[in-house]
Amino acid sequence: MPRSNADSLDDVSSQASYDSDEDFRLAQQEWEESLHQLQQLVSLVLLPFFGKWLGRRWSQWAYSRYLSVGLTKSFLWR
Image 1 (cartoon, rainbow, N blue to C red):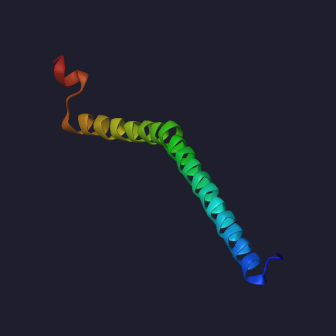
Image 2 (cartoon, rainbow, N blue to C red):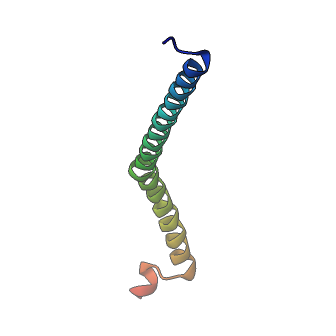
């Protein structure tokens, strides 16, 4: 018995939904991999760079504060 148009349309729509589900799954997987790469970039490159910069700024501020208070070698060894 030949297949009717309704049967063939059901097959096409179920195949299309399967493809869109598979496409969605692949897109979701790629998105998660991209987020993971972004997290690695931040934790391995940006945080150490920012920490180094912040540490240098803090040490310059602390040293200038130390000098402005007057606690230099001449103050301690007089």
